[in-house]
Length: 433
Length: 80
Ligand SMILES: Cc1ncc(COP(=O)(O)O)c(C=O)c1O
Image 1 (cartoon, rainbow over the protein chains, first blue to last red):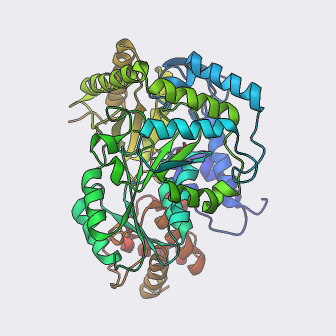
Image 2: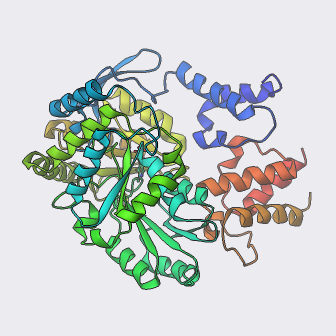
């Protein structure tokens, strides 16, 4: 590391505010320059007490919690930064179920799911999910994260010579799954059916397989996918569809079957992707598809085959979460989440730029990523924790405060959170003019 | 360093990263106009830097508006 130019290191230290995260993605020389510079940058931010990321939680991700900055500074915040939409991650019955499972099966699965890592509890989870979605001839393929579902399922489904066609706003895991597959990658304009059709016309030649990838609720924009038309167009051109319902499975739709249920296309979607890290309150993910597709993915998704199965404790917790989600508790929490989201949005509407978001993923655009550090520091210090996103997750100069509303937030908490956002908007100049 | 030479290198990396580009590259356009996503852009810029053996300071990469803007930066920093 000693070969890195000291003047560059000093520049990062003295001009830390001019740097943004993405600037360290590039590797420009054979030494470890970007790593040393990034370390210098992060250390400087900590020294200046504005490093608000990775703050440590001493307890469960409830709606209002204590946390401690990297340097030990304590803070008390309203939590709009966890995906725990229905509060199930800390439901006592779920914790108990996870404890029972770890007591029975031990800590780890100790093997790939296709060798000896499949336990009875995994089968119970598969059955619970099949009951939850309730379509004939469908099965699930379990993964250890939502990210790996997209990596594994897309690369098992698409081979070199085939095409992946995806919405420009798609999550990084879809982008990376598409790249990993070796197929040709194409983007269409966000939620724009004319743009999708243009790409389908070019790629659907009756010979190559084409997979169209979209989301139920777009994670970076908080808006709802136009699934009905996507499915219709895909069918018309003979393409397959993957819908990532990370932020909508268990939440959207009468029975929580997602935006697919809401728009009446559940049966028409070929690969329904869910993650257990959001409303499910755990970790892991699954693809729900025709049984023969799942069987193939189980064996040909390399990141599943060559990796250890889901841990028994989380798996046991998930079984309980699904059981609860199918009762009145689930119904009531889904309803409360929607009421909460609508209430919170009404407090901000017209005052800040909510972009195109229209769900429990609430977006406030603040423009340049150069504001991110100071803004996030300010929000946390004034008592609100959010999930900031910026390039490369979203386009450049289009950075956003992203907030996840849950069914468990109180009206008072949401009011306070909105006040903090509006205060920040005034200070950092992103009030709607 | 000639601008046409720089453009050729950028073009090569753009075509490598993004499927299906057949038209000639118009420097007044943005990478996103050719269907490049954020990861593609990072790869195109860093690939071109390695090939041209020119380092553009990291803080200068922020204000590049289009392909022409990137060529300008390469031209400036190849002289240093
Ligand atoms: C749309 C989408 N897909 C996949 C993922 C990845 O899920 P996980 O956190 O389970 O890996 C996320 C999470 O951020 C997401 O928003």
